[in-house]
Length: 157
Image (cartoon, rainbow, N blue to C red; front, side, top):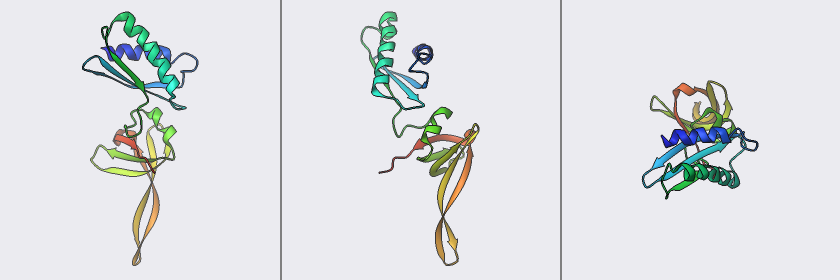
């Protein structure tokens, strides 16, 4: 209920200048009137953008009393380690290492090299037998979105 109201408010906000590249990832309502709002952007989410969106939502939460007098609102980007949930999140991660869990239970790890309307392409390092030795080869795999259970960007240090 509150999730859909927040979603509707953000749809309006994301039509304003300076916010048109933003999109909603998820709204999570917790016990004790805590609300987490995860947003993303085609150009990256800044602290200032989160702050402006938080103030915008607070106006409505205070006016309408949807969470009562006392609540906690946190607006942030999904952060590293959280799965990519929307097709729109993939292009910004081209060139990064990802782990793709497939619906069949298997997973693939490699570099995200392309994003299409219906699939992604990752480049994997695979060890193959070459005579008596093993050598590393780069193989590209196309993975349809319908086969993907979740995709997580891996952090490299």
